[in-house]
Image 1: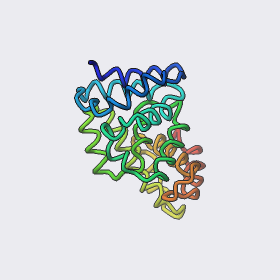
Image 2: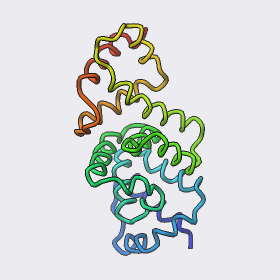
Image 3: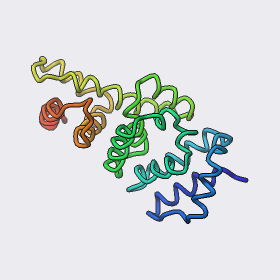
Length: 200
């Protein structure tokens, strides 16, 4: 009767590193559409919790996808290509020690800004969570545009942006998993520059 238990099962599996009993998993697949009847705040609370554990982000995504709950909670992500799904899973594997907001940013990294904002509003994320996610994803294009020939004051302004460190980290993860939308050159250049000037 309590369909939130499907997400609780996901959270426990993510926290403990366990697999879900086959009969329970089959029941979750059959009842997946009912997850839409659960209040957004409760859904977000369970997902955020599952993303907070080491190894949790990738495991949680796979459970959401394999049970069919992904299409009801994140239909925009469910519609991505198999290649994009693989990129997201590989990013989430790397985000296993980050905050849940960083993991959410990684989860939505293949979506455009308007879609990300729509999901954040639908999930009723807090203003702080929204600011973190929007900043991490919004800076991706600015990092990509860096050539290394910009005036130092322009680069300093970029590096002073709130959550720049997290944005650069996500960008580096995207380079590592082979995301064709990013390049290793701006990442390597900014990483060296930021390491030497971070305190300043």
